[in-house]
Image 1 (spheres, rainbow, N blue to C red):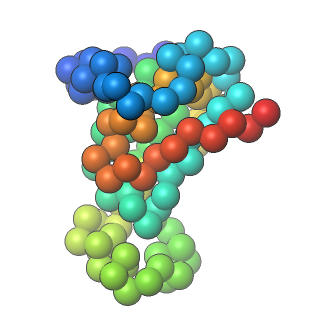
Image 2 (cartoon, rainbow, N blue to C red):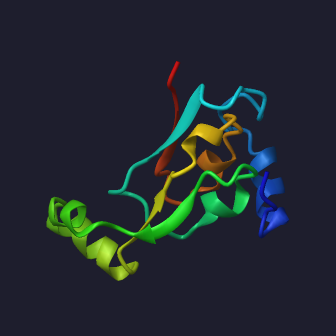
Length: 113
């Protein structure tokens, strides 16, 4: 488990009435967060609140960027072409903290099993 960089954000996310998931009780690998790169602006709130280190913020791949509609490209460009990635999705325990912390509503939990 990684330490939160901003525990106040995590506390607010934990108390959010629309928080989906299993309250961090799911076994790792049953759920994974799915990021909509068309909506994500790479602000990193997901990475800040995730207690399991599932997220990393990075630059969107050029080939992915090139496939986006012009309006989405502009938004991505304005935000430094950053997006959230889930290299450690197998560690997700379905807290739902990332879903409610994301200001762009770009994350959803998906059941994998």
